[in-house]
Image (cartoon, rainbow, N blue to C red; front, top):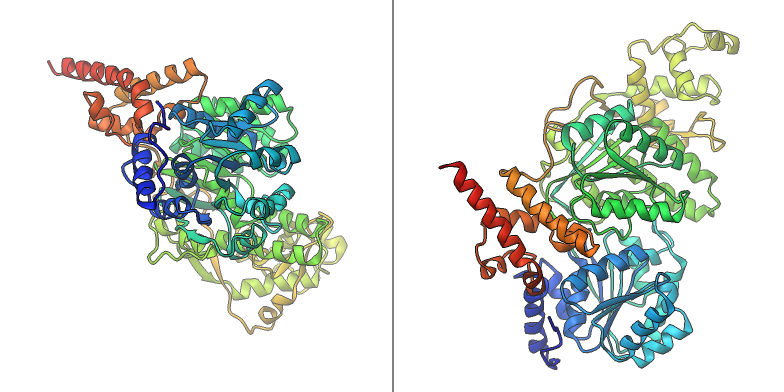
Length: 621
């Protein structure tokens, strides 16, 4: 398929018509999603754009379509090799002339691509910011016909963001050296502070700002108290995602290894991924995750950016993320295809203490630490919220959801609250009476009047708070202390011993000037209604037919050495299953089946569908 058969258009209306034609013929879609069309119009007009869209919202099309339509080569600045290769592979399948320049290429391969760039024989070229800043690359760009610059993962330019990369700071050179070439910066995660910084550092203040809703309605958000994390994770996967692909995030490398080993021992295909593993093992595990069904990656935050796998059905967190931005980006890797998916997390008091200690012990200056405290406080607020969790999440990004979503744990089973004023006063007093030098377990023993040698040796069996908390169980006291630390009323020491001390914030509580309502944690033995019983997966009514379509897709993918989703997404296969096309023309009407893929794969899938129909007909004879 040749995309350059149509001569370059010069007027806006012709370019707009051409953009719709490319959307349909190349990508297989009839219409742009909300905001996509507006961004495309801005770029084909030669204007700059700053785009915020959720993961899976279709950011890539915003620059891919204009790069194909406008004369010249579109240069995409991408932070990771895996992201470049994944996107280029997918574009080549569509018949788009795309390539990348990175360290994986042989010198001869790189020279061929550089020559193609200068001659304008590419539609899209991907490279990392480090390469773009090299004098040789800039010299090549000055010789090449350029249609646009696309800066992907633009939040990496923000020093207050969660994925800061210093090389991104040099991208302001694009505005100085190539002022006539339109630029688009794209990200899925940026609060108001980060958006402003992106615009300032990339000189995009006068660009059109396109902010889509951050809502991912297909994702069900659930956060539960941590009791036995491994047991909880196993129950979640077994009951809801037995054969599904997913990602499990842990804070430490040791926990990644232990969790992967635990899941493997229970029969799951679970692979570890963290920066401490050799590069070849990380690459092999990522490759299996991309190409095989039912693989679970257990990872630190080293894994994820640039992963374009659309059928990740769940993302689980066994430890608390440091910010809502990190949480949103990591959970956003679930359900990129728009099908039902889960964002599941367990967290507890030790998570809060550990992250606060890490923050205070970090080498950042006071301003940095203050910003990071605010981000962690917002994350803790999301965990402890008693209203719709999705509304709270979206509100953080300045996005309002008018009605509760009905698809998060706090909507499915609204949490109960209780007047915890007296219990809070007891807890805070106990911290004070024992000298602000002890951790939660010890404090609870004092409150519940435990008869042990340590308490007696410290003389704490004589303090006024000894034994005054027997009305609450140990688990209930843990909940009280967790919420006090999360709310900033108590702080943990920075040395890592977990000793709690009072903050100025708690003064009105001790004086009885404030009333405190606490979230009542559900009993751990009780199964939450509507959560684990709601299976967040694709609904397949004809499983044998579905398996046949997936088997053909897998065979074609293996022949070409590409992930199955590069052939067709699950949602495209599902539409084939529902509509049962009988001709190539009917197949071409399926979403995601563009002209190139129709030519390559249409007949192969028509044959599978015909066989399915024959088998189904035979079953009723």
